[in-house]
Length: 397
Image 1: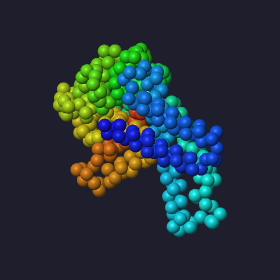
Image 2 (image 1 turned 90 degrees about the vertical axis):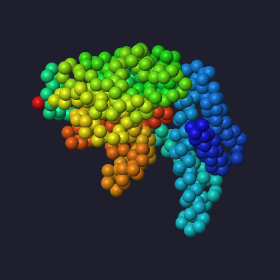
Image 3 (image 1 turned 30 degrees about the vertical axis):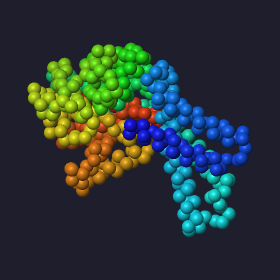
Image 4 (image 1 turned 45 degrees about the horizontal axis):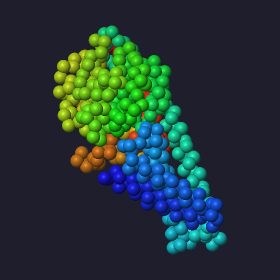
């Protein structure tokens, strides 16, 4: 109900505000105002049809409705902010007369010029954001681990988090992701949570497993769970996780440790949303720490846990680095506050992260929080990147 209420606010109230401000600036001509009104009416119809009939729609229709609705949401948010700036200056000018008398912000012409300028700016920013989403970058790093690894001296790990396969990130996009991952010539592939978006139905409808089965690496393809794997929308318990292992051919590590090639350990933690999630020391009871240890943990809430457990590499996702501006700036600022020492632990909110994105070495642990490959919802990277992480690891001892 809360999600529906939030969507209604965006789709009706913000859209109505934008519509009214544009209407005020348009010339009083039917051939202009009628199509203008039609755009808003059609969009609202698409949204409500998609919202209330989603369970009955075929995949192609639902994909279009979902893309339209999420795109419109981003558009309305940015347009609303820019138009509120105009209204703020209009209010200030009314009180303080900061603009020359020749510039009347209540007149049609300045309204229309500003509205059109804002429209062009938002469309340009969104086009760039969609381009950045569809063209993931490869972040490559060299890491040296001072531990003994008998049979593996160098390891090329390809890490992808937050793929969010489903109705929006469909089979065509997943195919591009798989191609991009395999281009990196991985020795080991790690998918660190939120591989699936919301339901398994969309995966079965598209036979999505045919793409994921193309992921191959000499030391295997492993996944850990994320919060989206535990979103309950009425499917059988753990249906999405079973799909990953039984259909997509991945080894899903659920609070599990495996030793690979008799040379290093890989640990996969359950997501925070898992009610039976274990503590890391319990998971690693049988680990011989003279060998390298790599930990996958989707949500980067308590980095010190991996450090204290003796992980050499700790990999996270979840944050999307805010996904789009200004969320990325808010995350960066809240991280500075988190690390400042000003806030006691009890006041650190869940949306605050010690490291919301990027690399950090903490004691002897190499930490990387990925911005994510896919997205939840709108397919726009505004101020952030979609990324695949490649770690060239050397074991030196």
